Length: 392
View 1 (cartoon, rainbow, N blue to C red):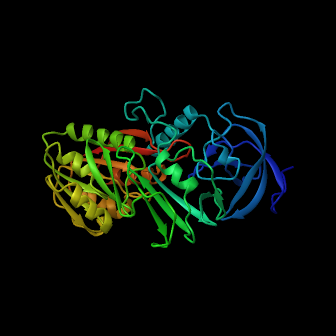
View 2 (view 1 turned 180 degrees about the vertical axis):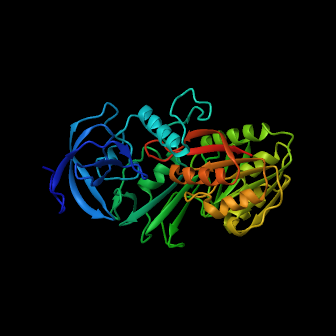
């Protein structure tokens, strides 16, 4: 007889078999009901308490691990035990995290998950601690902290496993008054750091060296100005890795010609390509990022355009590099890519679900996947960056 899960607080034992789209383990009971279980791993037996049912999904939390997965470890950060929900995979061994992410990428792209598969190249692994140079935090009673997993409740923290030390000091010891949120950013290789509270202008108490406008960072062989409101990858060694993969993909179709850098941010990929002889048009809708890009790329053969990529009409080109938001290219972005008639497309994705959809859409537009490289920018979370290369 199946367990009664008609109300909250009922308990049931389950064995999850797969990962959901947001990194929670997914199980099905004998009646076919789908359970989303954060903190569980596929293959292990867990007792869970039902919290709620939403849109046909039973949301539950682990109350006991009956039979643990060999990939389960004690979370290395004590803040997890105090309720911090910022790093939802800290209970998973680091090597297992990489393996699970590789499986998710392979499934999204319809590839066999085998190390020897030439289409799925080895994962680029990066340091698992002290790496984040951009951190968004909530504020409660003047202190910075992080929300409980899938909750609005804020947990002030006394340490942060993944924040760069320049930021950890500000997170733990800064005072943020009546702010509701605060953005922290630093240049790991320049030593500069900034804070931006929400609402802007809220009085805060931070060390005298903290800036409020922009920082500079060194990555991919270049110095970048990054304003508080501009997007930049969360770690400079990650920028190095992504830039190296994009550069290698471009070099495979040399000689250098015309390139588009779509969703170009502060100009990283445009700058990397231009430094190698490409004539680049960079397209970005965010004003702050475009202003930064024009400073960063002023000595290079790059035209920086502020425009909505989805509504932009591209010129004919040889190469497209696209680094969209978590939503991916979607139909309109793929339409722009296809209209450029580029012979090669390099897609930088930060979400495996959108990656799978974009790969399908590119395939329908005449582009075939040549290879993909996972880059583990975000240890201790289910997020993974993927650089996938398509040719026509």
